[in-house]
Length: 163
Image (cartoon, rainbow, N blue to C red; front, side, top):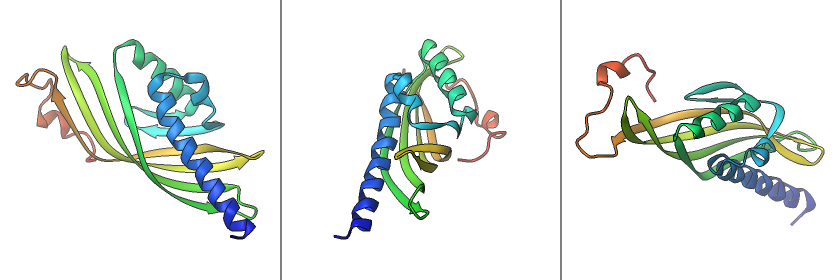
């Protein structure tokens, strides 16, 4: 295997590990390590937030105080490298997000199927995320106690964009 191909494999493996670590550190509340997954000016756009990543972390910390928890199952990633030398990449990662929260006094489990689209940059030999956008494909809510009415109706959801 030539040196260029070997470096491509190493870069892709470093990116995959970074994407996996993001999920573990976010779900475990390891905020200091989570900060290392994005460049300082990095941005994030998900259902509940759009803006700078440092502000996303503060919002995530606040959510944990209100019993709202989630688990991100980071699945396969498709990664394309660019630049010469290689210093940029884009990735598309399948994600399954399971959550538990309380809405209007009703405990709910939620499940969302999504894809993270990431722009990444390698600076000083280290890959980090520059921009993340989540594309939601399907979601559902289930009351923790079967048969409990959901605290919203299908009419309430009409104002929201389709997944």
